[in-house]
Each structure stands twice: as C-alpha cells, then as structure tokens.
Image (cartoon, rainbow, N blue to C red):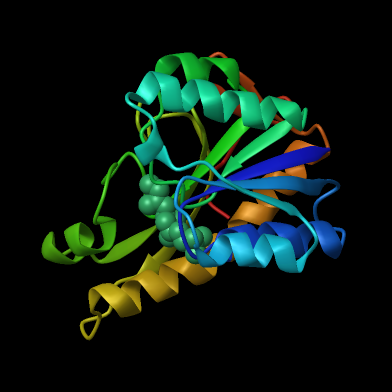
Length: 207
Ligand code: GAR
C-alpha cells in the first residue's frame, strides 16, 4: 500500500514506519512525507531514504480550512491508501478528517481517553498516575477521539521526569505503530462505524 506520513518534528515514528516497510513488517511503502514545519529532522530522514519530502508551512495560510485544503491536495497527488500522522501537531478540520475517514491513523502519547491534547507526560505525572502509555487510533473529527487500535502501557516510576517518561513511552510508540500500520496494509484493520476491527472482530487494544 502507498503511505503518506504527516509530521511536524523529529520523525522518530516516521523512522519506525519506514523501517517496518523496509524489513517487511509493513506491506507498504512511504511515498511521501509532508511537514507543516520547515527544516525538521523528519524531512531529512525521508530524504535519506529517497522519499519525497515536502514542507507545507501552515503559517503561509490564512485559515485552517485553506491549509487543510492544500494539504489534502498534496496528499492526494500521491494517491495513498493510508495516511499516517506521526507527531503531526495540527488540529484538523472535519472536512479533512472526513476525507480520509477509515484510512488515517494517529499516534498519541497517552492512554486515551485519558489526556487528549498536549503535555500528556506532564499531566500523567502531576496526576500521580501509576501508569501511562500510548494509543494508536483511527482519526475522526474529534481531537484524539477516534476508535483505538492499539495501546501500550508503561509504569510510572518514582524517579520519572517528563523526559524519562516520554522516552519510555516513545520506545513503545516505535513498537506499536508499525504493528498497526502492518495490519492496515494487510487489509486486516478496518474502521466500521465507531469501532476499529481486526479481522472483522472488535480489537483488544492492549499489546
Ligand atoms: C510522539 O511522542 C507522538 O506520540 C506525539 O509527538 C511525538 C512525535 O515524535 N504526538 C502527539 O502528541 C500528537 N498529539 P516523533 O516526531 O519523534 O515521531
């Protein structure tokens, strides 16, 4: 399957997806990477693998609608079957999410429905939670609210800072995102109504 990945930064999840395609865990290939921020490391990662790397700076657009319309145009040029959000830090309009419904995945660093939005690691620490984690989910119009596909949990240690916790979560991100993308590319992962199905069965999201 043809995959377009949207990023805003370092692109370590993008790297995990590229690696998954290259070693056969994902039956697909990343055909383009689009960043809303110029000069980020993820763009360099794409170029290093001969993947087309495009910057579409949201600051050059006067509204979310016009940015999303341009983004959709760029994506559609590559005719992807799957769109992957990998640290893409923009809120998307319902028109955009509707266009890719059932074929767009996101990864969010919390055990959704806990902590949608920003600063998830800090919020988990401040709440005194004993565990934290990450969720891969289908993207719907609701921010970080679409049906979950996979979650991974990590313990929160007494000694944890935001950075150590984020690093422990990130390791899990790199494990579960290629797994979810792999399922999708084999046609095993589908969105039906408001449920994510694996082999036509509601998914047990903890791996
Ligand atoms: C990841 O931790 C990802 O889960 C998070 O941004 C980071 C991107 O890292 N995404 C969000 O917070 C989306 N709401 P990366 O650029 O190294 O993949």
